[in-house]
Length: 382
Image (cartoon, rainbow, N blue to C red):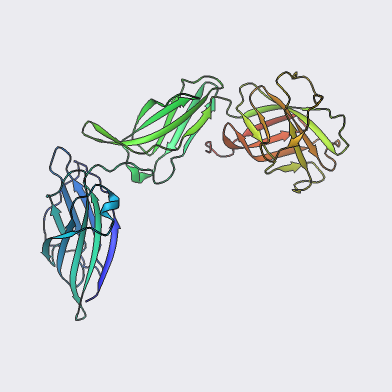
């Protein structure tokens, strides 16, 4: 007699609103070749807990045997495979469910349903195990909770989408400032696409957010795990920059130096040469055609100064790049064929820079002497 075992791990939720399934019953359902077991839990801490194990009628079934483990404290223990299983009942071939009220609240149990069957004159058996939790299932994110949003100097809007399988009844948003502790700032009703506006922000200040879902049981709440933290600053949604043709007295003809000034209210930008596109240059988009270097003067440098301050050296933009906050200025030196020519349609685009902590695009229009940093997608990326 052969035996086939299939193991299914399920964490089931206690909901008083769920109907209690009946006991043994005759079924007119079509028979199935293999054993398929499902389950649910009903009741609450204040009422009788009951597990309901159901299965599809199996072709050629002679009887069903129900086994159950002793209660354990964790899912890992219930699925460990070393549990002592007790025979609970033997049911007729027409029965397709088993009701168990002799269980404890907030415990893990392992059930095994074994079917003895006879097909084509041969006797065999199949079995399937089901892991059941008799408490309220915790909300765990099946994937990272992506918090997205819209920023301005006086507001930060958050939006997040939730997997349908979580079935949350509410969310708590926590926020902290630099060096501070997280404090709850919003309590939202459940749903699968939520928006919230934070108007209690200061221009230019940075805030870190996190979210967790909860389910209710009576007057109590069971909270899930926290989402990943998201840091945003109350700054302009898009960064705006002024460009000026700077002077590099020691620079040859194949170099072009531009001063980039970040407007007040902009977020922090980090410009690297990880990826770039050039327009209006004779050596466009050849990865070896252009060389980018940067320099950042001290805060004492006057904004109207175009000449590179004495003693300042350009460095590579490959690692840290040029970092500018709102109101700050820096220099970028571009070396390559014809970069200092008279073409009036020169533009360089950096599609993988960071603006306000988000992957963004920076376009430098050398013709119009201005630049803009923006996010391509509808909502901010992490």
